[in-house]
Length: 256
Image (tube, rainbow, N blue to C red; front, side):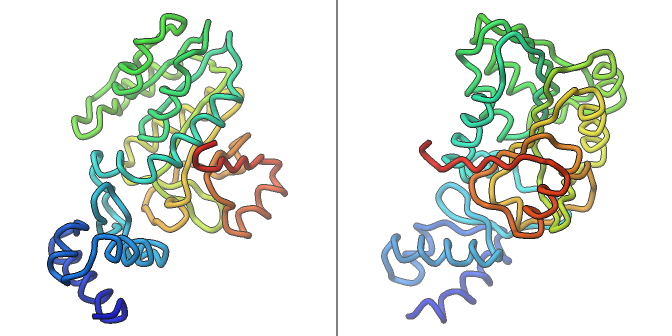
């Protein structure tokens, strides 16, 4: 069976089950796992599926992908982005890291930084940086979101307003063609907006999958971001807008 016939059936299975796995599809179609991986990559490039470890899922415009699935999305690219971002973060500085798997990658990349203070509303970031003796970790309180270890709500916002950070490192769930940063949880959006307000400079870490996704709540514009770290050149409209706004774009290659 050619890919022309496999792709529609793969999409039917994905819509029915919410996700597909490489092994199950290979058995279903009687083809190699390499063939299915190519099929899933092509469907992902077309924006019809999102790759996760071992398979793919149907992208959603109103609900975020599950946290564990997000962890497996583009992990090599996230690590490269994180390394590029960490290289721009000086020692002897105060930093805010918000919720997300990309900011968790940045936390890992800061493992050798010294004399830094990190404030976070991400329990996973706090646990990662607890291993770095050169980092003071402050956790912003709030309502715990068990799905991903995030802290959100009015208490979180009130705590953040007590600080003025040298740098905020934030992520987003999606990005519009006009450079708007988007998310799914309106409570998290309010926290992210406060983080940007309380930072002298803001960094965005977001891989190329965010260019193909949609989410309903607006965080901010790239106009408000000093440097945007990603793994591939953004769409031309975003590049042109960033040039007008003075927002730097740093493209980190996987493995760099």
